[in-house]
Amino acid sequence: MRIGSSCTRAWSTMTDESPPSYDRTVAHERDVSRYRHSYPQFDYEERIDDLAQRLETSEADAAVLPNYVDLTYYTGSGQPANLYVPVGDGRSARLFVRRAMAFARQEVELPDRYLERGGLSALAEYAGDVATLAVPLDAVPAAITSKLAAVLDAELVDVSDIVLSQRATKAEGEVELLTEAAELYEVAHDAIRRRAAPGVTEKEVAGEVIGALVAAGMDDRIFFRRWDARLPAAGLIASGDVLPLVSGHAMTVTGTGVARSMPWGPSNRPLENGDFLAADIALNWAGYHGDVARTYVVGDATPDQREWFRKVLTIHEEARNAVESGVSAEAPYLAARECAEKLGVAEWLCGYAEMQAPYIGHSIGLEADEEPTLVQGNTTELREGMVVTIEPKLIHPDHGTVVVEDDYLVTDSGVDRLSTTPQKLFEIQTGNNES
Image 1 (cartoon, rainbow, N blue to C red):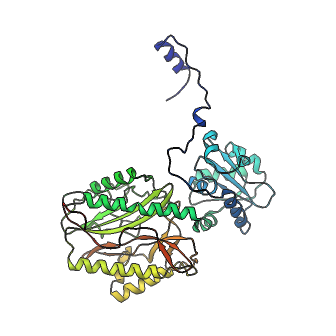
Image 2: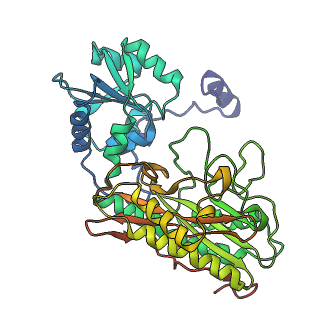
Image 3: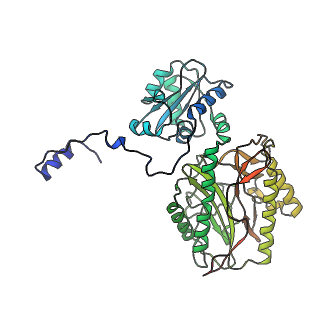
């Protein structure tokens, strides 16, 4: 809607009164956080200083972060802005707020001296000569990064590895939010047991799940680092003969979705008695993500189904036991693979044939898919304070698909589990869904 002189004319035709005169600052001075979840205090200046020190080991003269997730980590707000961090030139970092400065002043948890109004031209004037500029090339469109390069007359290099490495070790307050997120799976779990029944579609189960999660306070936007896919807010829910079908969007339980444009997620398949039903759900609490998966049976589980689940749970436990500070990120996968070989199911671990991946989990935080990834060949050292998922699945076209995924805080002696739902195979009985 365009607000202007036409509105003034419209007002005069409806009333003899003059248009009201508004104090334009009043609304913007209201507390923007009064209806939100509480948020811990973090030392954002320290985070920016840490980034500047890390940049000194790179070839960059400065970094610019325009993407909302990284902005949230370094400033406390995802408001539209560009964070400029110089390297060793005596100048301070600055946050150039593109829009809604009054809103940003309330949200950004940095001293006022950091805040400047303006876009790329204001940033370029402040920055001066920058030969090499670091930007998150994996998270910002090329149309934007090319503008940055042109305005600053700078060569671009990628800063994402530096940023993600810094973000990988979580502060105590971040762990609290990640725990809140992981515990939300209990809400999804109750919704699945309440709604799933023969004749009910995967999509209808997903509708029950997302309604319950949003009512419980979840943000239904899932922040995802990759550019070529979007996670369904209700998660990846799949059943029966759909479960072994793995689309190209992930080496996991994907489902088929309801559209060719994004072939993963819940479909219109109706549940049948005896089905495996798997739910792999990303959970956003105040911007931080949990990622939890459980397996269900519609009706009574058969001995074969129970045995299939026992094997995936054993693999999960072996992978979890391999996680501790100081080991490589591939160690949990190698432990899972060895266990799967002993159980005779390595052929079906995390996919099969050309859709099998040497993978057992990933890190989580402000995004649902952070580094390091727990994959064969990743020599990154796991550190105390990282939060990782362990998510083995056995995917077989005849036996079906089973998965157990949980979120773990890496400690100096092992892990602490953040998610709370029991690690068991759940049987969903119509009219009595307490199994």
